[in-house]
Image 1 (tube, rainbow, N blue to C red):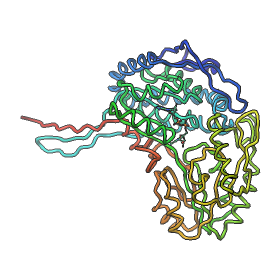
Image 2: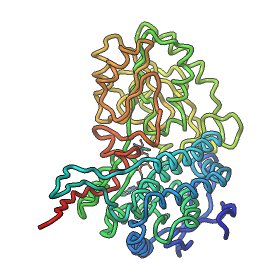
Image 3: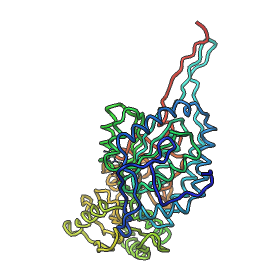
Length: 478
Ligand code: NAD
């Protein structure tokens, strides 16, 4: 195999110590557009995990001593190879996740931007005191073996963000994809074997038992977890037993506050996209839309008209915006939430029901001014159902925006920049946008307040989450 040989996207293996391995048992994901089985993938056992941890610990000894330049070089070569295989990754992502090929292509394209951006960040020690007699410095050392636990909504970008952060800071990493979307992650790591020494980047596919095995394993030093709040709490409890370091990127229920002075026609397409991208299965999507009462009716009419133009269909069809939701569990959860439209007597301005289809398709739904305590406002839908509510008083809308236990993202939209930033300053979330939502950079930290997470990923602060702080007291003589 040469470094530039195209990846074969038909067969899938675990990657342990740079060997492609199989397991006696296999399982498969499901194409959510037609519920047909995708190819078989390994079901890793405790023994597979033990082998991967042993290799990762052995590799750490030398990898942790390499320079940032050396690590950056390997990462950039890997990123170029992902780019060279971008078509295969994007098609596989649509097959396993369901998102339209255009959106899958964007996600795969972001991996290069994230790898280059994260590995451009300089991590320097810090001289605290220097005298003739002694020097006191703070420096950052790698932690050891990182377990990277990935969800099913953005399996490519989120896995790459964790791999780069771990490896660039001198750690070794074992990736555990979601059982719903193992395919691209296995191939990303298979590709990594061409650029990294054995044991530095590994990947294990498995069933629901594998995540807890990873968080419990005493040979793993840090867990970087992205997923739901409920699982995040289990992960933290499990990590407590061995006092593993842990970063949690969890769910959100982001508010967007629209002031009465906005240019409605200009922002409607943006709001529509930022509420429904990936069939609303993004942690920091607009999930609660607060529109000033003076423009509410016009805004709602125009939003409905715009969203009606967005096509629903298989991700492989051209011009599709809404693919299916990713899995049966999510589809059932969405059906349950949709049932609250009837039980809570809500008014759908668009959609409102889920029709039967060969896949997990849900047509976009907009709920017209539901009560603040209705389920569609209180719960993270992770499906294309958007509540739009009226507001008139600034303090009141800030209170409603901040009322939940989640605090991942929020946004304010106004022509009056000073007013928008004044409102933005009061919002309790890890990211706050003015006149946008979901802007991200690899060099900017990303994380949640309250129950939306612990710690951050990306940016210098994110990278430092993969490092131990060490204070050295260097006395120059006795
Ligand atoms: P999930 O919590 O069900 O699963 C996430 C991952 O954890 C999967 O790999 C799963 O196999 C694994 N897992 C499950 N139980 C585990 C356990 N007990 N111990 C260890 N690992 C375990 O989440 P999901 O349904 O895949 O993802 C959707 C959720 O993720 C949404 O709530 C969404 O908002 C959130 N999310 C957050 C971010 C963020 O950056 N904040 C990004 C994407 C998704």
